[in-house]
Image 1 (cartoon, helix red, strand yellow):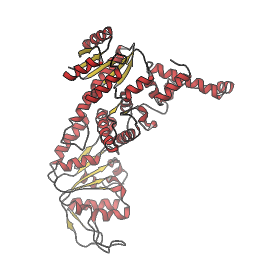
Image 2 (cartoon, one colour; image 1 turned 60 degrees about the vertical axis):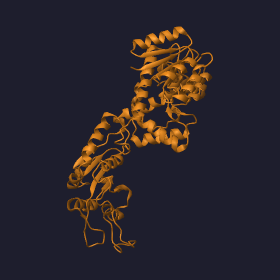
Image 3 (spheres, one colour; image 1 turned 45 degrees about the vertical axis):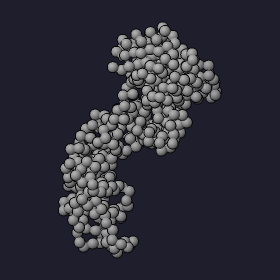
Image 4 (cartoon, helix red, strand yellow; image 1 turned 180 degrees about the vertical axis):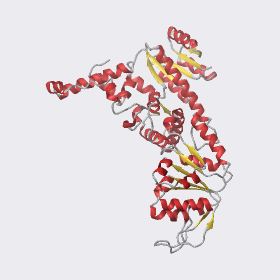
Length: 458
């Protein structure tokens, strides 16, 4: 049963929250001060702390700091009757999971609690990701299927064709197959077909002999000779020219290669794993890829799902990349705010895991506090989830002035009035949450706070 510690110096609020949470099925402990709360946490750790900010001796922000010092992964939600934007920003920067103003909506606090306890479980899951596949982060149903398939494929010598969009981690899957195979003590040799000029591809794959062409000053082994008795990974296989496809087919059929300029063939014993972000069946129909080569490569086809199809893995990946880049940059950014995570969960990640890693790397590099806030995230705005070319028809913010109004009132007045309407609409849409309204408008919280003060809103 999920346990929650409620901290408030007002008995009526403690009793109210306790009754509410017990009714929802939670186990609840209560403390009348930050000092008492730390004493309780010293005896037994709970799953979530909900604390008031304004308390005597040790206020909520001080309690937050003490909790994060002793229990960094414990989620803390702060509540207050004295809503202060400065307190909100400080709370989030210091690692609070969320910040709620009194009087709060009961459904809102229930939602926050559900999110907080869910995040805690996800973080724990991140720590216990199966050591069988340390190179691949994921515990979604989609990734469990991938792991099961890797184990089944690995013990066979069959060639594998891995499908997947760019950035999904196809090479990591290929490495995992090799690592779990019977030749895991042999070499894994990767080559990216699109990265090598056409005139050099044959030499890179099959090798060449001295003097076979200008610049061939020594004999050179190709990919298949280097990977003999091991695994050769051909990424972006759909980029190969028809001539190279024909020669590759011979390697697969005869298990032998002939270096460029050579007269002798060399026997090779290589397990081939290929990968592509193209639909090779369509390439075959268009005459750009050999059908017989396709069937030789795709003895076992394996599709790696895009990140948008396994959103449940986003928190795990975020946690992994936060630790990776915090260590790399020598920073203490170990948390991501609930608002920032919500932004990521709504994003469709056109660049998949590679893009998420880049987003977190940039966020850690830019963040001056120990928690990633929404303004530190840089997303491809034109690929935000839910955006369409005609979405303006149902956009609640379609409140721009018409030409007659613009010319009669002047640009500055109309722009100011329009900006005020946007700010007001954002507050209404988010239930008067300034943090969420700022996110909705895609401006920093500091900028949002300045603007509502400027226009005397709220």
